[in-house]
Image (cartoon, rainbow, N blue to C red; front, side, top):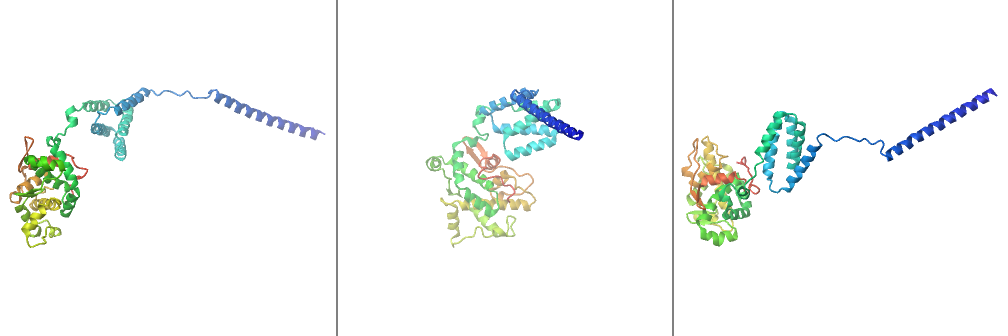
Length: 369
């Protein structure tokens, strides 16, 4: 009987305990549900003490994006100036930001990355002083004139705009001729544009009636020949030096047969090659040959003018006989008058080469020799 009572007690207590546990669990769940519904457990959080800084940056960027007068080139320059300042203090962070910009090419993102750094450097007086100087330096607005004009005056005239259209039509021929002689195409364009700008401004009637309306290059057929103004004597020398391995101008065995003739009348064939109104390939090829041969002459004399477009253009213009290798060569050549202002052939080539104009068609390839 005792054992029976004891067993009943155990069952009863166990049952009560289980019921109480379920009740307690139900109470907890119910309380949690009510608390969530009533937002009793919400963390009120905190407002970052830099909140106003973040808001100001966002407002500044919004205003900046709406202001179309801002120059992206200036923004990029300012970004790199600040990046250079950061590099003095935290090179690793500067490298990470620079890599991100190179990867994404997003100047707005890059500016925000710099501003994030500025927030963390707010207590660095030296850093902030330099950043403020940078902001003042790049806060100046471009004038109305400078926004609409090229620094190089001759690039603002209608003749230059016509030339750009015309030369684009011949880009494949220029590339082909340059490749045949392993000469940078942009160098061939340097001597081409010098000759064409001279003709555009000296033969005004021809320019107005034919060249400008049709957007074509002017082909010379008298003293100088073709679109690149090749003189007959220069053409004959170019052909001769291609085959003369003893000449200081000799460019190499690879180019020996580039200017071979296919008829018995060499004089006529040469003339027809250069004075071809439909196909200017040989004008560009002869120009490339002359540039290559002159460059070889100077190299063999111990002077490398590969990266001196102004010297190569000057020598191209004055001719083989005046090409005398020396330590400090002079820039010059024929005087070209463009809208009442005088330029030398070499200086005009120099300005064009480094201007960035037509770089999408004739990119910089100084190591292609």
